[in-house]
Length: 514
Image (cartoon, rainbow, N blue to C red; front, side):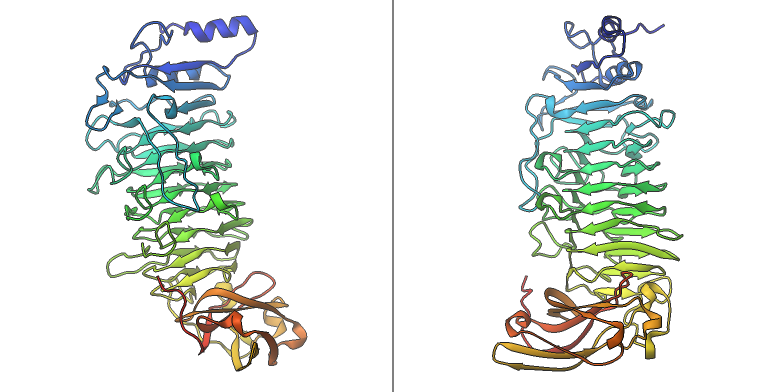
């Protein structure tokens, strides 16, 4: 019978209740080495430390101090590889913090998400021991203890498992400062063939899981697998912030995901934040052949409270150079696809969505997708495509009175009636052919400049009331606000149904000169 670790036993006896313990991994062996007494070299493996933590209800901590003399040391790269054998690592039964940054020589990233790539230095790599070890998962939260506290994983390079992380339960488990799917340096995919890639993070419950964060040290690199983040069951409160997804560590080269859009769900995803308004919240989601984000489920309010905000989608980390999504040969995919059969109730705002091979955003079947206020440019499909079938299908013409139904109610786009400029003032007349019975008024009309029907710079916004419905409306705005591109208009009703984007008058040159 396996003895109960002395460190945990002493803590329990002394306190009367479970007390947190720290276990220091001092060997890269995959054997069940559980002594972890801190006095005997090579007596505490990662497997053994996790087994110890599972015996203690308190939230424990696992640190690393593996010597260079250990067989796991990789001299060419100066890091330690823990090769997991045929038996998976123990499922996590109790909250634990596993911190790879404690290994001497490791250092968390210091670069903010809004300024560049990653300067992370990782020293602990965890992989299957076989060349293509997709028969097992990496780190798994146990489904048998769904109410356990939140675990955290930091400073680890994890690749070649079927799922690098499998998350269950209601706690806000965190994955921070890790490289998933790449080599230890984050410069190439760990696997360059179809076998052995696996998935990054797969979720099976509604926990408010956190992938990355706004602090530089929390940023992850998640690239080179079948998919980055896949939700298998309904999720609520997921946060994905500050990450590079589908690129290398510099954020300038593609290491895309090959079989799924980078972030994908066929279940409900409510109150999620992919990106955010804080400077450190931006994700770069680029280089993924099947697209950056695809949400695809059914039912009312499928994505209620979810926001996709402030990300770079289809560009490199500078936001200025192409790193396209959706480039599947012969079948270009939307960069962002929102699908359903009822209300979606999602906001997509403040993103740069550029250079993608298909549509920038495709709305397929559902309503209430507010997606007008993004910076779109040079997507080969429409900036915003309201599909009339199951796929993005190009321009949907306005209809009389806007009586048709479908994706975002097939909200009619504004039509420019006239535009004149006098000195510093521009006078714009537009109308929207939508009966009050066919939309939630007032409509918000955004006026932007851009190129090819894709708005890049918001110039002004105006309310279009039910009393004004179907009639021309004249507004004024500074001529300077229109400098730099074609005039682009988009309508969004009060329920968040954004129209396709109408571009009618090319009056200035294009500023999006990347």
